[in-house]
Length: 565
Ligand code: FAD
Ligand code: MLT
Ligand code: ZN
Image (cartoon, rainbow, N blue to C red; front, side):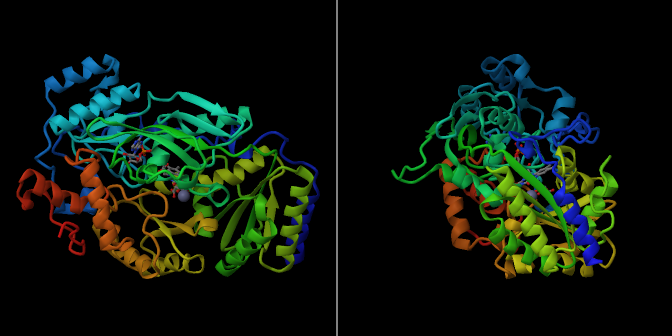
């Protein structure tokens, strides 16, 4: 069996067909297998009735009775609308119910807010005027990028004003010597990548939501994605930011230097702060050179230990050309094959428990090819890999990627999707998937996949609909398990509304208290993205600040440390 599979791989390896020089695979978009993500289906959402007293529909499954609209925030009135119309173009002050319904609903359709106003500023000055006004009027706001976030951070909980960056999508400059791109925050990631490709560069990050997510949203979530293993975190790649603070102050940190040790590097506070400290309006970012030789392989492994061995071997054997190392268990790949249109299994003979997608990107076609072939033959001979295929053309490569990137889309087609995004030591990472399967005992579908090269597991649990019964079997167990491994309950998606009261599983009380101090300093009236990230301490704070009685606002999560003590 092993020989047949090995020879199958050797056959495909010996074929001369490869990706054309000068194209970066990650930007290929074939008409039949588009890699772009277009949320057309959101265009109307009958569930949104836009009543300000209606909080997230999923609220009943998470915070339950613990959260109510904070009455200290003002209610929108006609004077407010008149003010916004005097500052923005009239068409950028949106009250149309259908458009509001899209802005009120998150990608998972799990969180549905009741905002009655969507603002679309066109420049930093307009963002500044909006925030300054909202701050003085105590109107809560939600910054919104492409609305592809997966933790309920990008949509209002109640009637917060949505500030979308979609109209701020200009590329400002590209320094072609140093590969530094400066642009507005509303630029869509895929558009930036396409622009760069024509200039001989690529974006240092890539994700399945690239066709909709914006660079400002990426920065604000500190998105990881598929190239992280090669190019690292946005904390390393973002060189500068322009941010508008809650009171309208424009903070110019839009440097373009690789090295600058003058004082505190404040931009890092905003990277990953999920719209809780300011609105990102401009970004400068380091962009790697686009390299001509890209190869993609899909490999099958018999057990999780082999996946780990493959990772170690890939880091050593492929070294500098390794650009992605993604894994999927058989449940995840089967889900994708079931729900994604026009996608077939590239390894039809194989019924392995695990699959790994490896991408290499390098500068020398022949050398890179030889390196990958030698690596794959070696891992086959060693029995680490049982079967595998290297994409022979763009279409095949797109199919491999489509399967991996399409898992999120396939998951939501099952009905309800409880989504977890954990950082764990690689050797322990799959343990939680197995434990969860045992725990749920066939009552839900459990899939494990993710960015194995970065120690980042995505664990999706799917049932026909959301129920408290399933949720109580999953949480807090999953967070306690992760915390016990000293892992993180959010590797890359953030806390949002979903995990607003869960930060203590991954951060010490002292660290959370310091975060609270930053929040108080930068947004003292707490108008930015309320009820999310650090929600409990912030509500406690607003009670102190605005003299409102505790029971009206929030019943703190029992294990939450009081950061203001
Ligand atoms: P939004 O969803 O609009 O907002 C996300 C958060 O950032 C919110 O809290 C919002 O208030 C805040 N925000 C947005 N813009 C700004 C701004 N300009 N200033 C201040 N705050 C702002 N994530 C990963 O990390 N890796 C992946 O591989 C990945 N793959 C995905 C695949 C799919 C199919 C989907 C649907 C999502 C995926 N995500 C992934 C999650 C999501 O795409 C990322 O978090 C992305 O960075 C969000 O960008 P956005 O523009 O859509 O932001
Ligand atoms: C991914 O890696 O596919 C994303 O983070 C999205 C997801 O997990 O759904
Ligand atoms: Zn991911």
